[in-house]
Image 1 (tube, rainbow, N blue to C red):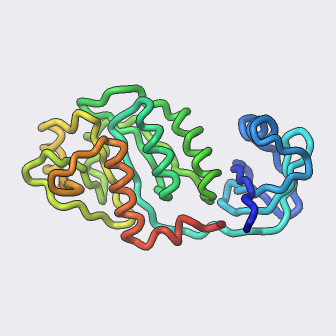
Image 2 (image 1 turned 60 degrees about the vertical axis):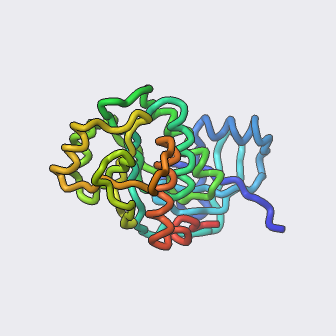
Image 3 (image 1 turned 120 degrees about the vertical axis):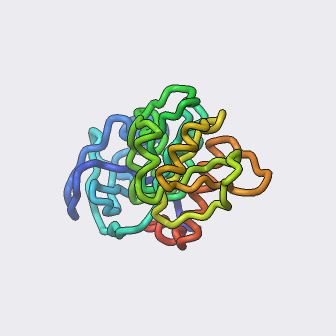
Length: 234
């Protein structure tokens, strides 16, 4: 049975034999939560997405060893979330595991809850470590619905629209997920005017916003054979 090796991210670009500093939060997690000591083996993903085998050293530094994997360009969807608050954390965690390229905070008329991108970043980093991602999603926004819906590839999930079509998405789709209360008639009109399809995941299927985000992203990722692309470095 292969022993699990913990993974951390650093912002700097690395090279074989180089020593890099860990972020204070990562150092505390390794030393206080995982009880790792100098000499422990781990994996480090540098700012370029290169994965190195590494050894933990004193005072929160790591020494890079063998090359494990290099980052490869891949196609992945972007997801914009219309709900903030604690439930969005679940979406961020699972979207990171699925390998989405970017997650944005989408300001809709009926949006409730604060968008805490600092917390999203922590959740994404933890999920990226656990799922052996070679990167984590970029975070964007908060941005008004009216500014996002006109971007290329935009699809709006809306199970209440009479003209909603069955959901289908390209690997690089831009997925707009409204808040729990749904998008407004005015926002539907904006989507139609922009040529962004209104789509439903299934007839009679009503999902919470975070569940809809995860399901839609999974359709885009797996439909493009994305599982192999997102599991690099395992």
